[in-house]
Amino acid sequence: MNIPMVDLQGQYRKLKTEIDTEIQKVLDTSSYINGPAVNEFASNLASYLGAKHVIPCANGTDALQVAMMALDLKPGEEVITTTFTFIATAEVIALLGLTPVLVDVLEDTMNIDPEAIRNAITPKTKAIVPVHLFGQCANMDEIMAIAEEHQLFVIEDNAQAIGANYTFKNGTTKKAGTIGHIGCTSFFPSKNLGAYGDGGAIFTNDDQMAEQMRIVVNHGMNVRYYHDFIGVNSRLDSIQAAILKVKLPHLDDFARARNYAANYYNNAFANCEKIITPVTATFTDHVFHQYTLVLNGVDRDGLQKHLSDKGISNAVYYPVPLHQQKAYRDERYQDGAFPVAEKLSANVISLPIHTELTDEQLKFITDSVLEFVEK
Ligand SMILES: *Cc1c(COP(=O)(O)O)cnc(C)c1O
Image (cartoon, rainbow, N blue to C red; front, side, top):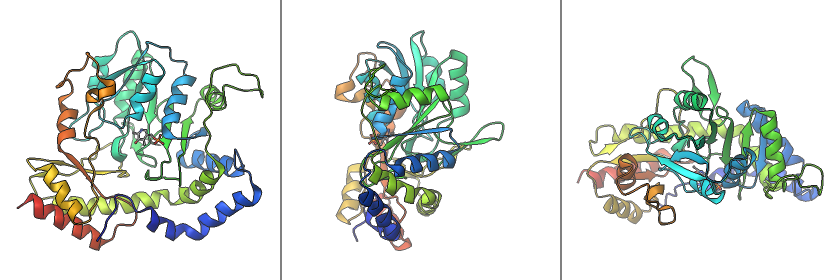
């Protein structure tokens, strides 16, 4: 067997007729940039999310950058985010001359710790960027309360949790990415809603922020060739939008298939003391962008080799927290500064999770993991 982390081929085969037709339509009209497919997809995504505005852009990293540019954050101002995430989150903060303020995560959900956010606030703090890691939401009741108290912007990095539902303390629900002032997502092929190339989008319910972000993604231009702001060129191309338009109606089914695999794994590992299965917080559902175990006294390198030798892909997200990355080394954060993230980085392992996993594959994977762990 050869089991990839993500089976893009298998999923494409199921949707091939529809996807090929939509790609052909773009080719037949040659409207490659800002064609009808882009607007249609953006409008469909806005309805799905219950967001007033969806602004397509070139990738998830740009989405975060555009959000921060539109909020007119100034060099030296501080943006609080998690140290346990993909680099993009902190990268754009640093690129804009803002100061990334990193905080630790909660041991169970691996999401940003609201108490740690509270403790990191200074008079220079302007925004919080929670990342909905691996497919479940951070604690947005707490984060929005902190933001309101201190007049901060909240930009949700929703690259990994598109489609997840958040339930507030008062019982109302919202889609991940539509709770803060701005939500950002990525359509990188392996994401839950993946294109066949790069893509991204920004969501907001605020008319003014939406207008400013539309200007920023378009070279800071409102009236053609009149540039009122410094912007960027960040577009979702029409072929990617056509593909995404076909896939969007299947997103909830994709989440169900991922949950089926996650449940299979959870059950198989339930009685193994050396494996801690993912913990989902009560206020969110989980769309399992990644299925990540925490190992307890297991030789992780050995397990990775054991699985790879059997053709089972596996990965460590993330082997080094941001504060220990060479490019982001900072005297504010010594080793040991964020013990939870450091411990997780040393002990997590992610197993294949996607929409095409069969029971036979799941059995082979879980048997193989247990064979090594319990030997
Ligand atoms: C994938 C990802 C991004 C960046 O998305 P790209 O489209 O690859 O630029 C940002 N943040 C997180 C948490 C991600 O997982």
